Amino acid sequence: MVRRAASANLGKFAKQLEKDQLKSDILALFQTLAQDEQDSVRLLAVENCAAIGQMLTPEENSSLVLPTIRACAQDKSWRVRYMVADHFCELCEAMGSDITKGELVGFFVRLLKDTEAEVRTAASLRTTGVCSMIPKDMAIKQVLPCIKELVTDSSQHVRAALASVIMGLAPVFGKEDTISNLLDLFLQLLKDDFPEVRLNIISKLDAVNKVIGIELLSQSLLPAIVELAEDRQWRVRLAIIEYIPLLASQLGVEFFDEKLGNLCMTWLGDCVYSIREAATNNLKKLTEVFGVEWAQNTIIPKVLSLYTHPNYLYRMTTLFAIGVLAQIVGADVINQSMLPLVLRMAQDKVPNVRFNVAKTLQTLIAFVDAAGTQTRIKPTLTKMQDDPDRDVKFYATQALQLC
Image (tube, rainbow, N blue to C red; front, side, top):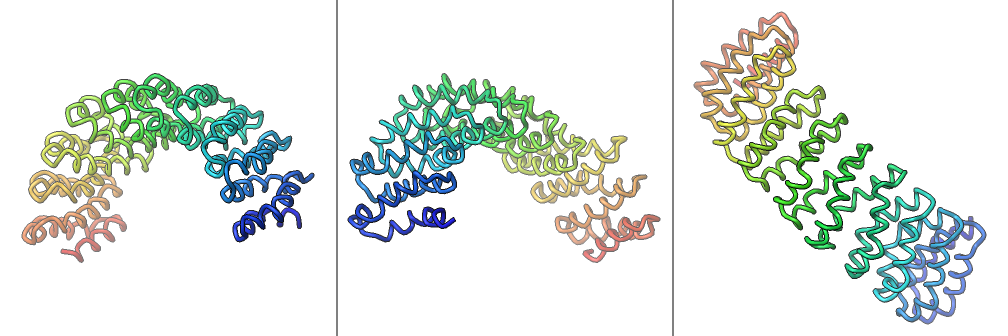
């Protein structure tokens, strides 16, 4: 425990010393601790390599620090190798460009092929960072073959780690090399059996779009995205919904209406409440992208038509969507189409729908003029105060206080 504590603080202590003191007093201790019999002590040497390396010249690092990095990268304990993989970018920065290209890339390739999944996971998370520090040709020649193997790695955690960073390689590789070397890998990960892998790819699509453009993205990846919109894992569907407004702004209104418009309406009837909630917020964001006129012609009629659906969840979704869209569509749309429908739904047979009518009317009060509130909303809420359901009474009374 004493040696472990000494090793844990050695790098911090070294930073407070002059370079001559570091070389005369600390380096010998650093090398001794790096060869300790306990792996819990040796693994801390990795952080010390980065800290001490920043204080030395490349020539000094090559003779004094690099041998320790080499030993740790090949250590018999996976925990030590894991630490090397986890801190690899810091080690590259400390050692400098020449040592990174000459020695460290080779260590990194071995870590990507390590027998332990934990080590491969840590190394996978550093692929983009390492590739950005070395020439593109070297990344494609030495690191990319390992990445291709990791896409089908036996460990789902390794694949998930890779999926969380692989999209960041697009700016590093550039448009042509992304299209030729990475697009197929993205598609493989988008179709992975493990939900977290798919989620990690979806959440980083924007990085690829900036490099290859929306036309190529839509041709190569959009079919897979549409397929994921109906994924059995609700969190994957949720991730797709959250990405839709950004995708819509890049696709344009015509392409969106043709390819993705129906999907957005399908989500309103999803069996998972979080999806239905996200779908209503998605409609609001789409209206902000394409404008109120588009919403009035395209989505509002479809949303309002759900009020006749035999399943009460769809009818409640209509109310949720009205409450959200009312914030941006303007008074004319509210008065002409939304408010009359909400007032009609006050007669619904299901208490859950009726008390959500009261909550929606409370929201609409802020967007309806005083005359409309007194002549249209208030009489309906007054009647709802006599409803046999206590929840309906409660929310009707609460809304009346705003009238």
